[in-house]
Length: 166
Image 1 (spheres, rainbow, N blue to C red):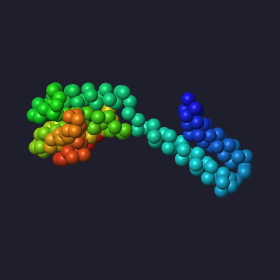
Image 2: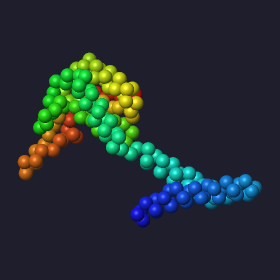
Image 3: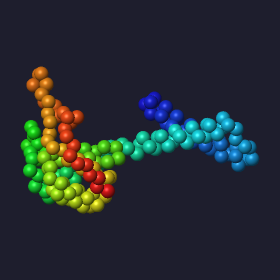
């Protein structure tokens, strides 16, 4: 709770008060000093930083939207590759800050990739969503730990193509 109050004071209330104070002084005919200009610029930067940081948040709506887009994509295109260790096709969706990302595994042919991207572009227009990035990978790579647990090794996967549906 204290953290939230501190953020409100530092990023919203403080800069707003500084801007109001500076405007009133300027309207009364007092030219600002260098320190006052620095305070006003700092206030504008803090408010801009707050707006920028909240513009890239991922909501539950974004997660639900990408899942619906992936489900519809799977219905409309017969994907050839099954996911490793899961009973589904190798297509996964993820909501990131300013984009929705779809990862497709096993579709290597560029003509087939363009068909998938065309479907995604139609879905993006239909859902009016954030920009969608479609990444095509050769195959899923998993690593097995000493205790027998399996984890995806996304850093070792080979990216074939990357398209953006706007």
